[in-house]
Structure formats: C-alpha cells, structure tokens
Amino acid sequence: MEKIQYKLKKECNHIAFIMDGNGRWAKKRLLARHFGHKEACKRVIEIGRACQDIGIKAMTLYAFSTENWSRPQDEIDHLFEYLDEFFLSNIDEFMERGVRVQMMGEMDALPLHSQETISKAIDMTKNNSSFFFNICLNYGSRQEIVRATKLIVKDVQEGKILESDIDEKLFSSYLYSSNLPPIDLMIRTSGEQRLSNFLLYQLAYSEFIFTPTCWPDFKADKLIECLEEFATRNRRFGGLINK
Ligand code: IPE
Ligand code: IPE
Ligand code: MG
Image 1 (spheres, rainbow, N blue to C red):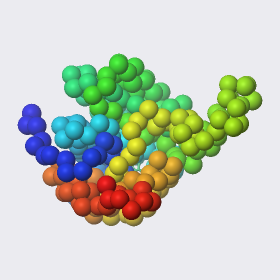
Image 2: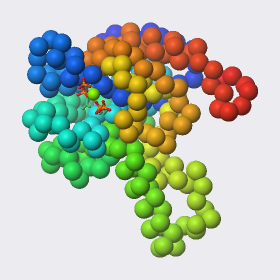
Image 3: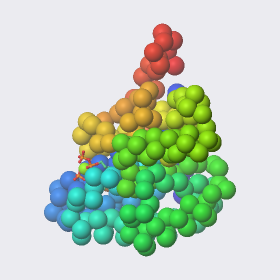
C-alpha cells in the first residue's frame, strides 16, 4: 500500500469529519441511498490511513446522529450492516497499525450485532496508541452535554467531587472525548454549512472547512487540499499572536 507523502505545514493533531452527502452521491448515480453509505466506508479507511501516514494523531468521524433515527428503517439497517463489515474487514489492519478504536454516543440503542462488533473492536484495540479512530454513533452533542452534566451532579452528590472543583477542565473530562487531543480542524463534506449537533463544546476554537465534495468522493487528495487551506489560517485563540 502506497504511503501518502505529505508534510504538514501547521500542527494538526486531531481532525473531525462530518461525512455528509452519501445519499446525494448515490442519487446522482441513480442508485439507492445505501450504496452511498457503502462507498463511504471505503473513504473512511483510506482517509484514516492518510491521516495516520501524515502524522495526525486522531480522527473523529460523525457516522450516525441521534437525529438520524428518523430515516427509513431500511437505510438504517443497511448503514449498521456496512458498519459491521467495516470493522470486521479492517480490524487486523487496525491492530497492525496500532490504531485504537473509540466511540462517542450511546451504544445501547444500536442494533445488537453492531454493539457486539464495536465493543469487540474497542476492546481489542484498547492498548494501541499510535492513532485514535473515534467514531460517533447515535451521537448528539446536546445529549453529550446533558449526560456530562448529570454525571457531574451525581459525583457531587456522592461526594466524589466538590462543586468548587467544576471548571472547564473537569467538565471536558466528563465528555466522551476526554482522552483525545483538542480538535484542530473540522471538515464537513457535501456543501452543507452547519454543525448538525456535532461537538458543540469541542469545536470552540477549531478551524472549519466546508467542502462541496460529497463524502464518497473525498479521497486523500481532497484531504491534502483541506490541509493546505488549514495551513493558511491564523489561529489566534483570542490573542494577537498567529499560530
Ligand atoms: C451522511 O450522508 C451519512 C449519514 C448522515 C448517516 P447522508 O445520508 O446524510 O447524505 P445526504 O446528505 O442525504 O446526501
Ligand atoms: C449529519 O448529517 C450527521 C452525519 C453525517 C452522521 P445529516 O445529513 O444528518 O445532517 P442534516 O440533517 O443535513 O443537518
Ligand atoms: Mg446529509
């Protein structure tokens, strides 16, 4: 497999992707929507490899939102089938490459077969540390924030922490993303310019790129274009010094 040759021009440890446009990609080819999700899985592994080769430490992928349950059941069934296939066919490579699989979102509502596959992938890779592959399933940022709040209240009530301990650092540690580096760049494909309930807390100072390319067409060359654009951004974090 050919390694992507690209030297990062600006520090970038963590990229978050809103993988949008699968349905439109399929429709344009007169295919059922789920074929877009099938093709999307190929890009996930390719972009994952590219990120790791380039020296990025973590990727977070929005794969299924808390709002996506309102889709037709047939599309949902196909999606979770492809997800299982994805993990089953890539787990060996994840182990070889030292990739750690993590998930954000509530596992309980996922189809049982997917719960099993994902739990296995998370467990098998838990000691890997070369790259984080963090997938958002049944994920909603509002749900995540409410969940963190409830967990904090519980820990205060049980005396595990004091109310006065609550600050931004502690709050972050109650989010699903607690062990991941800050997100430097968020890329949304398909031309939509909104967050759709994605990482509202974590993206506070991330750079955003909205590309018209649909996710099934988002290959490594498109990722590099985004990284070139990212390199031109001035990250000031409220100060005056460009980073
Ligand atoms: C993104 O593609 C994948 C999921 C939301 C699961 P879409 O399925 O939303 O594709 P479009 O936006 O309808 O084209
Ligand atoms: C966001 O895409 C969710 C995922 C990519 C998993 P949607 O297609 O669900 O978002 P909206 O409905 O266009 O905002
Ligand atoms: Mg969409």
